[in-house]
Length: 389
Image (cartoon, helix red, strand yellow):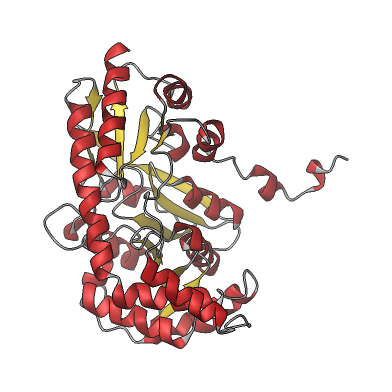
């Protein structure tokens, strides 16, 4: 028996990330414009870094609260009061080692081996793997794509629900499509969950990146009632340019507190306390920085999408939310091969749509949370490439 065959089948079956494949292939190339990963080009701001460094130098390096330091949980409560107009005591918030960790804990809390969880596709591939590695079965429902716009067919969603379904994974605003659930969509999804007695895991990481005229996207928080089975996953990564910090959070019913604490204990045993000090400052003092990040994304979105649409070879509309253009290019039938070819020929790195599951195979994803001037250069290179196809 080989070493590999002696390992857990679930672990061996975990797929290589199609996004990471392009990153590994392209990393370090001179003149490369990296639109591959879901992060901006700004480093974490000084006011967050200083608070973290001061806490580190003050010796805040010991074991800490499994649910998060009290100051951070209260800062999260205050943040939601400001931006979501909800009054949720600190007991609803749990600090995790990244948004990915938050998703993994939520899936583990809700599902058992043999259960099913329905997700909307195309989607960030880590969602699918989190479900499968936990022993549950992921069931994808492709969003409809017509005239460059993505939409959810609620009848199709209900048809995916079986006696084995334990939950719905809803990411809105969505990565990679930019689809945003309307308030009516959310009401209908919640009604389905109530009707069938199942959970909703709501990934609202991109809630502030919304281009629909409001300060944020519609949220389940706008409509939920006490007793609804909803867990929210979120992260400091996108809003505050903290992708490398690996700090996230869950919003969940206080009754789940000991369960979540135990899952934290047996995974990462808590986030470093000095990192949490930086997260407190991000929440309390970072609103202007977040608004500036959203402003850069809005400008860059328009530059990139206008240029690509002008080629008359791209089927897409400007996304309603998130930080990605997910484009279908006439003449591209293998997005993985195209992504590698684009790296070689024009020095722009995109993520292949095949990495995002059902319905994404013919698309390419570009992250536009970058300097608008650099995005304009990338848009010009991509436009020339598309015209030559």
